[in-house]
Image 1 (spheres, rainbow, N blue to C red):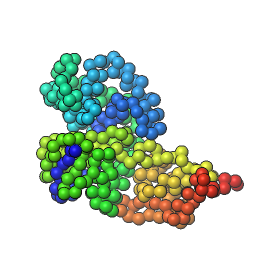
Image 2: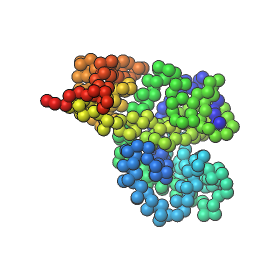
Image 3: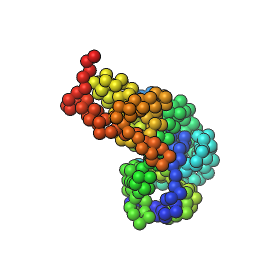
Image 4: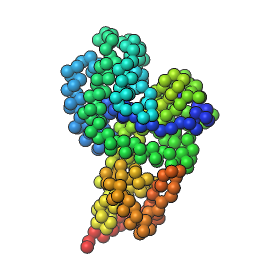
Length: 331
């Protein structure tokens, strides 16, 4: 079991960071695995996987680099430089490109847990990795980056509210499989039999990405440590918009009903905008009408305002679900 020793001061200074490079590498991992966690990922793979595979088919060295670098148990470190706050994709990928070739080869032997293939005993591995990340960013991430960014920001809002309610331990327990707070200033980061690391005094950042089965850890010795984790599924998969019962949609209108259905768990306005794809003004009007009807309530969590269903809202949503009676859809 791998774990980090984190003192109270380091934990108190920890913060969330968004990283275009981490999002791009997570998408590269998704393309490599070609296994979707939800219909949204399946649709994305259907669009982008053929082009990705064609690119690698025409570049066997880079294809081997990807297979070797995304190991079964560990990712080659030079592929995942520790995210920095405010860093652009271009700045991040420049750090991949600047990795010493000897370091890249050494990192690959760790991810492979064995000797380096002869075809990868070369000096241009960082350049090849950077070029592939640029391809994934340009073709598959940048066109939707603004929506992705809003989804990631919404996740940060929800996690920050969770800190105010239950402390950092509650947040760390829920980041990703294998990560949990052990007590005694110990943060478990994975299930591998790695020696513990003392990170007290370093910077600890938590970095959300939208692909649902892809996370990792990275560090810059004694300075910065990162846990990259999948954002909340309700955000990443589009929030279950198709799960709105027909009768409830007929009663409230499909867009307003979608907001009510989503509020089974507290969410902020920005989260609702990111998940539903509706504009800020539209979401605000729906929330106002639902509050006036007594179906939704709001409360403040730190700097954020979170909305959730009232008991009356719960009854209405549950009554409209199949098998629980139904809301009439007749005029």
